Image 1 (tube, rainbow, N blue to C red):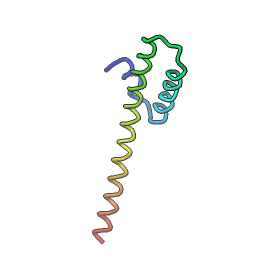
Image 2 (image 1 turned 90 degrees about the horizontal axis):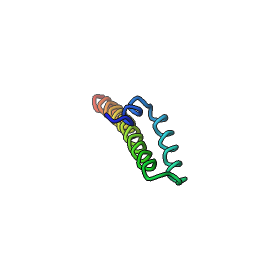
Image 3 (image 1 turned 90 degrees about the vertical axis):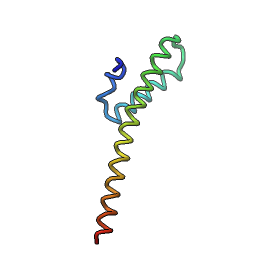
Image 4 (image 1 turned 180 degrees about the horizontal axis):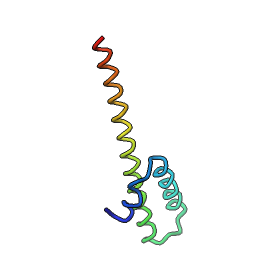
Length: 76
């Protein structure tokens, strides 16, 4: 796992989203060297992956809950 990956692995959705917003603002502000911009971009990619994993987990939970309700309705 990369250094950035180890920094982001334990973040909750809100934490990762907020840090991603900060990264985007920094990149949009400009004035960074190419190396700094690339490092920030990579950090942003890692944060986006963390957010996506959280959202996918939420989708799965919702789908499971809906399937459970539908199964209960079918059983009645």
